[in-house]
Length: 141
Picture (spheres, rainbow, N blue to C red):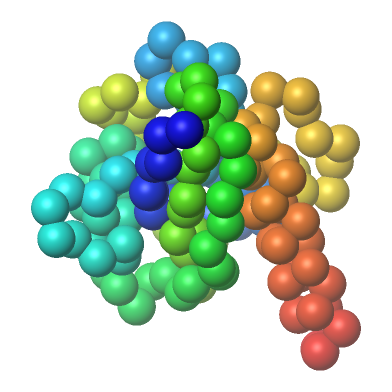
């Protein structure tokens, strides 16, 4: 089995919807982000990938760590993906433009039924963690 190490971001719009992307030639919707280059930290890789794929310029203080998650890769057979997942600290205020290998983007409401086209990592690991985080935040208020 092949192992893929990535960094991804949970970014939200003002309506609280999660940004998902679909790479060219694939069917699964996933979080924006990608593989580390050389000796990049996960955070450095994420900030670079967001700039390359979505023309978003974020700083380290704009995101916080959600956690590390693993699941079967959506687009690569016999591959396990291991992701460092970050969450935007506030809703995006800048426009998102698809670039590089991104073919499409869509905003996902977390309180609606989930489409079957989500990548396993997003559906099985990240969205449950986001929902738990939102529940804990709401309960604390």
